[in-house]
Image 1 (cartoon, one colour):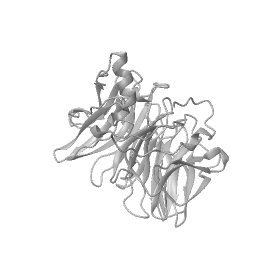
Image 2 (image 1 turned 90 degrees about the horizontal axis):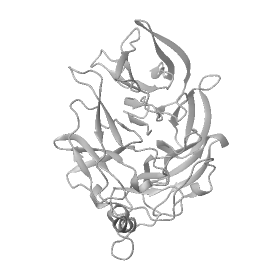
Image 3 (image 1 turned 180 degrees about the vertical axis):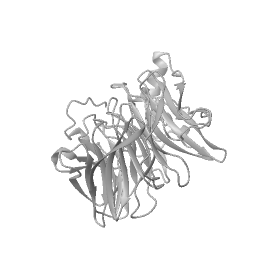
Image 4 (image 1 turned 180 degrees about the horizontal axis):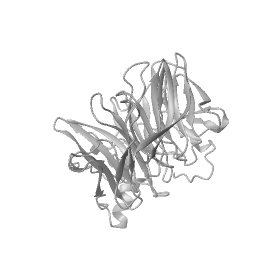
Length: 380
């Protein structure tokens, strides 16, 4: 499963406010429900016959910028700003009440929660300083929050590259240029360049799938920001499909179909489409030249969702009539069925041909070929 998290930061010292976050295995989710001054944490259970929500209110309402991260044991990590510190607690239901277990605090300026870790029980956060960024393990450790890495430069984003929670990709800004680096959390934060398309381009990693090696990228290397895709360990170019270039809407990928080992071009990708009329859903595969656009379910928690291995996209939604619901959308059938056609698509992967007929920005070999991703199969 691909974890989904929507996270923003209001100011340089604000707490990251996660609107809706799903665990890496798709079993639980959490959001800050309510409105105005009556906000409270809410945990969703997604792996049963029907989804259901459990409110986890504290003694007083939460601030709008409170961060939440669900764990696979059913608890929810809450991140509050208290007396100039970032305080963390674990919430859990205890009959009609909410149990709360404090796990410690971190004193720093800006601190944001990272997406859910693959192991389901650990939680990490980024603390951005003037010249470096600290990676903190704020849950799942033995003695409260633990400083696990210090990365030179100001970092943002956060994408897990493996299923063990060892390799973390961060977008690092240095000297006015942003590049993605891989951070090895088991080697004290050893950092390796991961993505560099052109020397002065800003290259950011949006999503990564550990099964297929598919990477979803945003870069201005083509002259302006565009969505592209590549494969971990591959020497082939990063491709920027024309079908992901809409003149009147913005695209944001949020989920990749898991389980497609050695088949990155076959992975279904879900994208949030934002235009003047609101937000709706896009579905796409790297091997195809089309973006399928469909209406989102009423009350969709826009930008949230998760794929099953079978290609069913699950979209959480909340309405007055259904306060906790999941709509399901089937990925469109592949366009290519004949072997000869499939072979041709391999040559134009993503809709832009190889060769002189279209300028391509060539990605340097991804350094993760040498990085210690034990047990992961890469595709070339």
